[in-house]
Length: 204
Image (cartoon, rainbow, N blue to C red; front, side):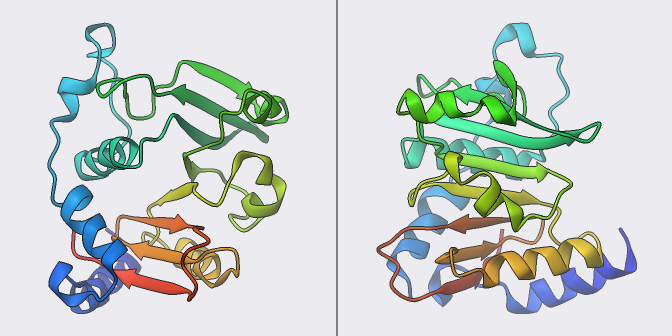
């Protein structure tokens, strides 16, 4: 862990709140029904993929599974950069056990992502942790993937000064109505019912 990450973690431990320290019904329910609900990730991995190393931490993977199920998300995607190309892996969620962290059924160059919208499969959860471009660009460049009910997840938001700065720029965006900092990763919400912009640092 870098010196920056240690300093950020010390700040996080001071600022992080439990469900009893928040005054938002949405965030209270998020803590109770997603963060506090533990999931055995390996039970959700098909036998043919048991030997694949999971790229997400167990806590992050557990949170993703709970988000997918709680918000009834049908389409999960990972946006990442490989050899200067922006690619996107898509996973269509068909049932309560149909989830594999970071292992998706189809992979496309991002330019072919329009099929998602045409098939009325609006992106529920978009993971941009592997995207090396400017995270703010995602809002405009890949707006075709997002709706007001979409959720963006960003990994390692405090592991370097650059990532912390980029995260702070993200949460200041007018498009983001609610942001949640869990130290190891962050979540962005765009729901229109959030009339006031809100940011929470939560214990996890």
